Image (cartoon, rainbow, N blue to C red; front, side, top):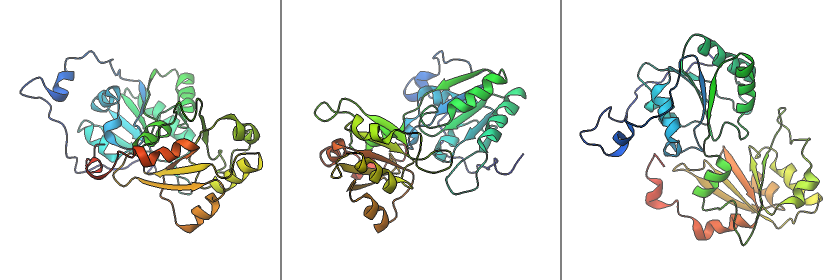
Length: 293
């Protein structure tokens, strides 16, 4: 197999017991009627924004059942501890500026494994259908007549902000929100976005994968009438113990980005809800000590 895809996973520890002496904890799920993960099929599962404990029950069921797991760069490696010992682990991470497998090649791998009679789990950071290319992969699977299931995940633009004490909506500040990606297929600021409309459309804008182009995005929004004093919160490594929050304004965004490197991945929120972090910052001290979330 192409060595761009394969990553060995060793030293798996912390696996949950296969049985419990009493019907407590995860043992209570043993008798539940989870949907069958059929051979020759693909499940696209959202792994959530980072903390492994934010995986859904269906996602956990898929990890325990899959013959092959093909996972992204933003997936927490801890989740791979919850696969079967004989499960094949395949890395297919795409990170900006680094050598990465082509999207078409990843989709072909899904088809190849499924046609070989495997239960194939495509594990994707966040939610498969929120800037996750899950739709492209499903189109390929559909054309190849491969059965598939979508298991939604918690998106960083909602769950990640929640861990920063930032409600994406709040009755006193906003009744709408816009979710945008910060770059197109070429890596540049999306040219197809109507930035003039976006600047005025919602009090809150949430940007994914936007650090590289955020100075240009800020300038564009201001040029179309967005208040330059609008608050900006940048949440790096959301939901993880080393989560970091950087605060600035649209006017000061460029200088903030130049002052010190901001860790990636990061989610950016523009609008008054970002200021609520100071009052609602619950993810501190002992809350950060638990690696599960």
